[in-house]
Length: 219
Length: 201
Image (cartoon, rainbow over all chains, first blue to last red; front, side, top):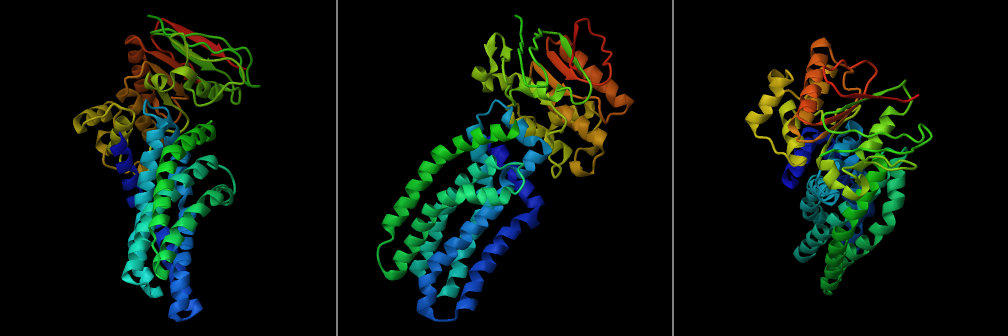
């Protein structure tokens, strides 16, 4: 069941490629504009790199949240998913996984290429990838709570941002902190461990909150 | 064994509504638009919560049964619950797999043949007509092993032959000791002995 649901969402995303690529292009554009706008000073770029990459990833993630449940809500498949014998927890996890693969994984993969524009060292680039790899799933799964709560509401995008930003900020701090640490030469391990812990906690609790929110939204 | 569904009380739309249904019985839900038929059906599904009262399945509240109740239930609402970008056969197989009754390709094709959609099996649902999409929505009922069917305006968008097909399916389901609760504008005219009519005003 889990596999089928993930497969289904991946196929749907593939058949609606334009929507999905929009998130990736947004990320690329935002990250690439900074070196152009701020100037080629290496030290400056290296200092702002962690923040820029992470903020761009965060914004891109927020913009894509409506897609997790939006389409299913509109054609009635969401309520069908909630009417199966499968625990809603697993259904949410499957959809969030598919969403992460489609919307966030491309960001993780392209980040090192973009990071070159900021003159990051190889080590720095590696930490960028690892921090995004640990952090973007958190953004997806926490974001799913906001997405579920604002389903079908007008101005959903704004509301989602308000709901989800307070929870995103710790992820931002840990993630950019890790990259920052590697840039300044200190050990990023503590930051990465915090990210890992946030990931585990959010994977355990958020899907439960999301399924409760879905049942409310579908009523 | 008797399967009971009792609903007492509700929202402003209706109050102190009480009924039960047992195996092989059809409940026809009648009433003008806006009288709360859809709301009642959604309450029976467990998608919505009534302001007062409860729904019971085999004597136990569906709130407590949760997924166990959903496993015995198949719902076809106003929306067909199908994805536009998937083909007909993909839609059927995915909904089967996700609801716990996976369908192999030949099985799925058999069901599509029964509703007359075999030729369209590889077309994206987007290009099908409203009637065809409704028929595709019905395949979900046929592929599930649910005892209770909750149908909202199942005859809408269908032409005569498709309407007869639906009547056939519902009659068959009732013969197999299933229960059907159907909201409808028109008389179903089913050749089935046990019918209960519920009128909302």
